[in-house]
Length: 319
Image (cartoon, rainbow, N blue to C red):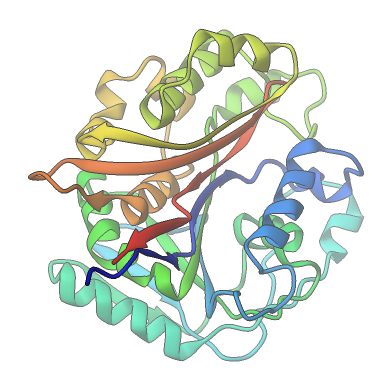
């Protein structure tokens, strides 16, 4: 007798554009509201039976070079690092409480060492939580996280392909236990930002180049259509749920800097785009035929603001 399939929860991998610290002062920003809803949906706003054992946060503001990956390892509450300058005084008084987990940090380290022995993976007991981490976490979990948080560095020197493969081999199997949050930015052209009329606005300015780059990203992730773009341009939230990407998305991503429109303009340095590769790799599963990669994608976008959120995977059927 053949058993019927059952649904086994895999915690998702999320890529989000963390935006400006001014988001913390905004009362009605749609992206901020979206993060809060995601925190509730994925059971990290409060601890429940379906909550992950820990949140693995990859921050664009925690960087390593060479072949090094660092993982914050502590069991007590993280100190905060207010690593931004020239903002209102009240932003430097923001409080957030999240404890780490040495045991989970060791588990992530060991998995990476096993699957990618060429990488130098170290534990970091001195890391103070930067705004690339605490800015989204405050919205996802509230002012105090009931769930441990482990923070991983973004390597800015390794080939993109190496990061994708590391994440596919090491992080994807950990989604049984971890909610993966990759915090970066869809676009990060700081010169454009400072040309904006409101220098410290809570969004990056929308330019034709940033829109085209974003369109390419969504075409790769979920086959965005002209209809989606038309709705987004009118300020609607566009939602595409669980679309399977058939093809080698890892190869497509690995060549983004050479082949995607305006890539180097939108990311003069790409530490803010690289968190995406951690999330993509963690979501890619080998397909049933050869090395075809299948990616489940949910994308939610506010047309006025290129700080959208991409949610990869949610559950799969197992026999």
